[in-house]
Length: 66
Image (cartoon, rainbow, N blue to C red):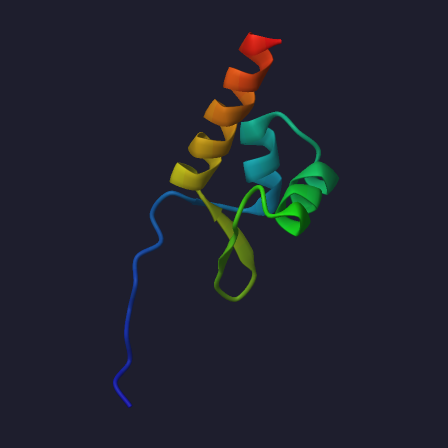
């Protein structure tokens, strides 16, 4: 079996992802459970910066319309 190497640029730990979004880690995991955000599963769950930016933009848009 051939070994495949991938690069993991722009991958954040759950703690850093929660800080980026300005939420608690527990909220982050609730959002994962509810399907609002999808983690990248490697040896543990991580979050891709593009996914975090998408969720942050949605949250900011909802806040602006309220």
